[in-house]
Image (cartoon, rainbow, N blue to C red; front, side, top):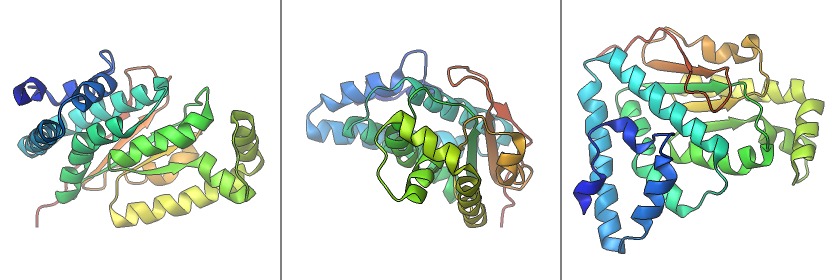
Length: 236
């Protein structure tokens, strides 16, 4: 049974076209607890081995990382729910990828300027998915809600709060990004309709050893994502 889940290609665990994250997580959740633990343990080991095997070829590693996190982002855009089943799956897959990269002094910086149809889903669902992937999500809507000092429960309220407090929201977001850059952490920052200068702190790390930068400036459903020059970390 375990072998069924040991794919030959890393991207197969996240494939957008087959909705791999949700289909696989639901199927694995049906297994008896001990068998489920064994499957996830085996998948996690395979993930770590994938990354370690690609370290000698940094360009290919960067390409693979871009593919899988872009597919995760695309999946977020159409997700209608998110439960412990998906948490378990992404923790054992994407979370291990990010953790293994971190162990080798590599951080992934993901930015997007898409505007989601339902920002409430972004606030409640997408941030959780990023966290399970080992990222620090920098969500402008959550920041806006904190600045409003009240709970916002609708799409319209969140959009209004962001637009009203946009300058201060981006100031707070940039402080967080600077801290994450300094700490060498992976993060995702989503700024709806964001201009290039609003991603300056992310783009400033392009060319810094160990920083994989990804920027999504097309529709969330698109398979395209912007990549940059990647320089592997210096070995000590």
